[in-house]
Image (tube, rainbow, N blue to C red; front, side, top):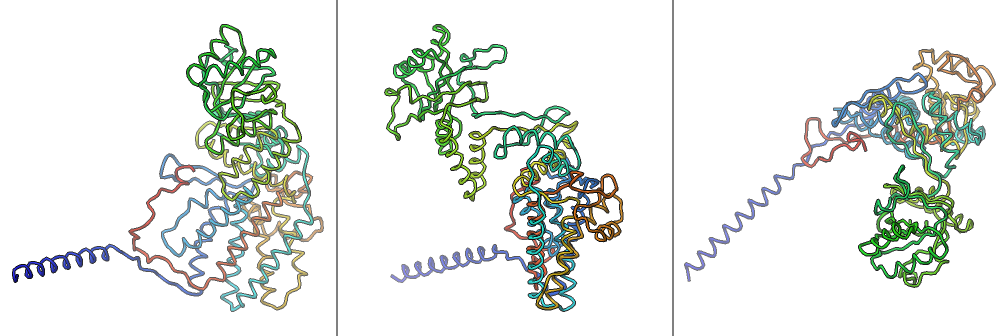
Length: 575
């Protein structure tokens, strides 16, 4: 009995000891990183240093004579770009406090890029100007909350002034001018974008892709394009182009796979009786059913083609419903109470022409009711506005473009991969700027719209001197874009600003590309209101947060976080 108790006690001691060793091992692995806390002016100065260094790198790209920035990539060769947000995202500092300020400016650039698609350099320049003046005022003892109220008041007043002076655009020449300015004066890009928008409409999708030639190309697809080609090459009826072309066909839209030959024969007979071709859209056509279609085509001369339904899951079902609305047919599915053996001629869709290649299918002039198509488009517009997920929004926009207009592909050419990448960034900016201009109108470019808004601020009433100081900060910051554009062109920014503010014509500005004063609207040097407005709002928002910060908490210099994110930087990989 004694031995049993001793053995039990010994095992308990061993268990407790091993458990304590395990616990100590777990605790020792919780390597918490020490933090460095800085307060007041020191904290703001460290962040300001990061903001200034990042802004100086981004500013060199601004204006028609802005320079390129070469960025080293962890994967692949260096990237050459004039895109502000791309430059901003590539910058990281060794000092943690500087990085905090730089990261917040990156947020400004990214937010402006997401909302307007352009104006990231302008937003960065404004952020630097507002934050620099804000730090000086806080260090001089100005009440931070009053300063904040003054800045917010000034921003609201400037936006109201810009909206009152904006001009709506509609002609192809005006669209060309906006796109040309955003593409750093390359008129060829502006003309191609204007042509694309004319072809596919305001709601059409224009995508930018890498080209395979030295020159830029524009490929426009009118009608509905499905990303699926023929199931079998035996359906080809044009040997030269390797395509299947069907004139005025009947279109069977089926949700499931078709493998029963006897049922499909009955549907095919409907087309033969009407002496019309048939296009079959289904999840798949298998075995005997596919063999029967091929035999009928080659031996009986029946014009027929089968393709698989594009997309997956809910997106596949939505594509079928869109196709049914466009062609005036019905989706044959069990959920709707339709079966393949009971298909009638009025359940089949129609179109004037269908062209099927190895990779895609283009349906032109569907026979659907125009009113139903417009109702469907309106539903998709609401889905685009209400959707919060970027993937869902893109898919809804893609479906809308297929129903309403078409798809244009801008293929960017160049002699090297680096040149194509640099030009592609400019094309994307120009495309986004053009869409923004069509949406909200334009204002005189070259930074003069913001410059002349300073006159409006001079008469703005404030409650006290601290708020007045906030208004003056915005007044000075609004001169920064024009100053930067002129300086990058080799001119005297202060002298140009002084001359412009002396006269009364609100459209007069400085053409940095030609080095002379002219009417900016008549010269076609215009900026989208949405881009300028978004850049100003985003810049003031982050600048206020930085200015009102009183402490920073960062990892202690030299300490390594064992739980640091090991995921690679998506920007380096090209996402």
